[in-house]
Image (cartoon, rainbow, N blue to C red; front, side):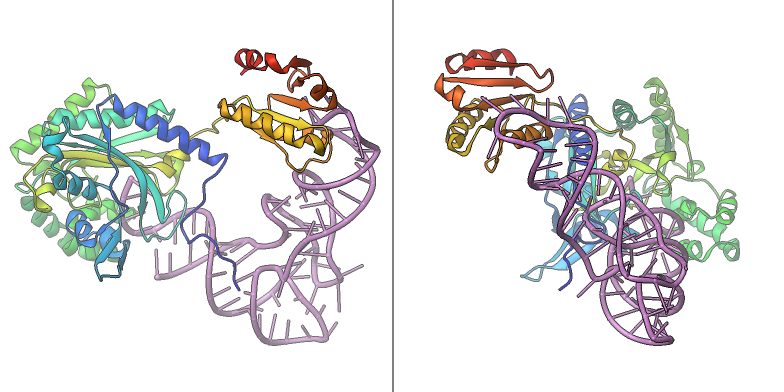
Length: 416
RNA sequence: GUGAGUGUAGCUCAACGGUAGAGUAUCGGUCUGUGGAACCGAAUGUUGCGGGUUCAAAUCCCGUCACUCACCCCA
């Protein structure tokens, strides 16, 4: 019989790692509420069709990385590889555009992609993200980037770079793609096999290739920013101007393209040099036609998603917040019942209490008290029982006093 | 999906082809009303798994699985 271990690309979280997660999650809720974001939670799994239509059936994510299976009624179900299509679906399904205003949501939760794990990449990984609906103006895109930048600063992540670009819209992108394809076709033989394949399937992604040879060649290719229609051009200008007003440092990079099909106009990415190969901390952009794509009205939208594991890699150790624990020690087995009664009394008062039911002697109990980091050890011995009192030892100062049982509440009010 | 590196006690790691060990953690004792320290002692392993070479394999070879990193993709 072989040992059962966690599936590849998943992991268990506990102290001290979990402290970082708790810290980060608390900060996310706190920080984004300043921008009037509300939390939304959508199902972990959806009908596969949602992601095929939403993300794009030609994307790598949909083609190779989805956890898709048939349920017992033979429905095709997929564990969400990202959250944006689900949020859009939820908004349409629940008519949230008319129910809640402003329509700004954040989410935190697990996502699933069948990828080969490596640093900063897991099969079950976690993202938080925000989505803004019904706001088309360029300033909103800038505000979104400002919030992302501000959040990373808030958790003391500083060694980062912000890249932005515009990928145009259904008006101008179709004019650009043939030009790009034509240019790539001319130098086809010099491109790597992957890029050659991308020429017909997804030419924009040639810009993503990290091979120097391909980078040099594609640097000569036409740039999307030179092909933007007037509206997209103006939009991108305002985004950049507003980012400056927000005092957000950014690099305009015409090579920046994203792996999901739904993006229009503004796209952006924040990367960190500390991460190695998986350097994207966060990425997003505008997706003005996803609603329509999924069968709804035409609602402008913009958002981003951030990799929690990747952010955690940047976080320093979080010191454990100390609660004043009370450890109850008893002199011998006969006094155990008294000790249990005392523990119940204290716990009903909402105090953190610990005791050892199998203790053989006081010494062992003090050792345990020390191990759990107790602030005080309450001692019940024959003497204490006889004169209706409790001995209280301050574990830090080693000071010990005896208090009357009737004075216990007063002592607790003062010290706990 | 492709490639490289690593798999030995709970953890961190040793061991020339020749009896599997140390530190640490755990448990017990010195110490039955007082913790952190010290000292003494105990327990813990199919050396990831399977095969091969050899008188002899943790060690060499092959396969497999797992982990890590990189490609790819992305957060």
